[in-house]
Image 1 (cartoon, rainbow, N blue to C red):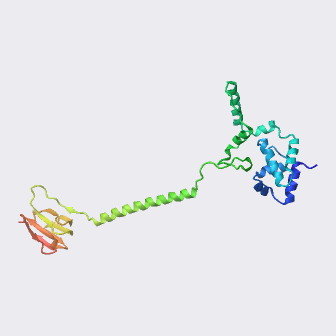
Image 2 (image 1 turned 90 degrees about the vertical axis):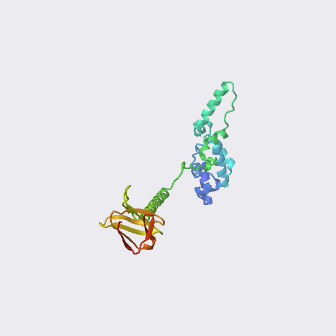
Image 3 (image 1 turned 30 degrees about the horizontal axis):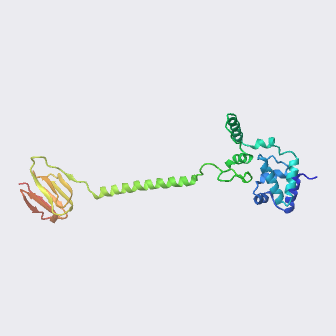
Length: 263
């Protein structure tokens, strides 16, 4: 007489389907089906699931499901003691608490086998409570290392670019603003004024010893006081924009290079 597993395997092969195809069709895990065909029924699930899956698989293979289940029960392998090993310890812990509470005078209904089975499968995640189709879900967040490296490189590039831009702006600002040399007279020194009628890019004033008294740009209306102890030579490419102020009076420069004698 053929065993249950031999009948299941023979029916499946006669239909020409694989364990994987049968699992997809019945929504029962392939390893469970393989164990059934090997006459291994201890799949660590409550007895109601063991019989239910066996009946479903048999019906799928066009075998008499109820007869297969009756033959399985006749084997005596589905007793409560054996299947109790598959229950989660936490379920038994809840039952112990229920008993203890009942002794104290509070009536607590012990969990049903269905509730215990649901609790045992609570880790199936995201609503998948069926142990037949349970697949462990990976925990945590998966982060693409290559994406992190690219993001870090992009941020570093942007920082470097920003630093280069700031340096360039500072360099251009420094280059466009020439340094100003000015020998500022002290209180009581005799001076003459160098007055800009309009903006001038560069004016140079030196004494007869070649000492630079002033060198730099002048803004429109700006006045610089120059020592007049000696003769002063003033040079500029735009003499019409510069005047000399002395004793409250102003005189325009005549040439790009003008010599002014100290009175």
